[in-house]
Length: 332
Image (cartoon, rainbow, N blue to C red; front, top):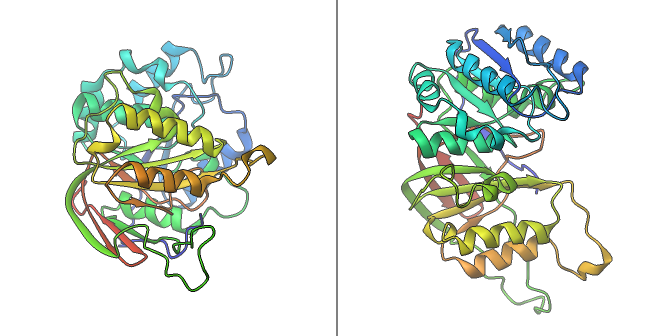
């Protein structure tokens, strides 16, 4: 799934911002990428504050649970414009019962944007479930700003637009519908989603599918009837993706959604045993199980080109042919 024709709603009142870097999940192993990310943000004119335990290490984690919990609370108390995670990995689900959600909600009300990806899905959905506050699915420091060479220009533009208050939506182009196996070459291909429709108001939520499915049955999975769910994953074979979607299906989550947006599913390897079973097989299966439209190719996930998405915000979704537009306007 490529990010063909990706766009952000752009404005360019890009003043310097205060960005707080902290590590709530796995330990930072790539110190060079961490330093490059800091320098890149500073080169963009931002003031970067680094949490004292951002480079802490305790087994696979960025410090023990108490250390990482304190880092989250320092980020909330920092008064920063953005609290940006250093990296994802694993570790946040361990902390969910002990997070001071009221303090996080106050920080968000005061203007702090909590931004992250991957394992950060646990924090974002817990905050939404506990407080209703909006966080941002977007980049992390090392993997996105700390790459060798220049960071992805679309990712950087979307990040800047949200920071400056101008990020109001994103558009992308969906892949062409493919003919069913065995269909005659002249046989028309039925559209996988309606050619034209609008969802005028729905709450956007979701994130990494593995993390999201691990929250089922806990107080940290938001109840979002009539929502728009977005999902992505990395290093997961399509059958595992289907198994996690099955869990959401059997839990009644998918049936409640007005639409499901499929981001990027990357870094998996098919095997001879699959005999033609692939990611598109999962997409077709999902479309057969729910009545809501399933839209592919959302430019978000463990990829360089990723847009910013407001987790918990009211959005509008419109589709015309292969073009999709997600608009949130006043999510700030």
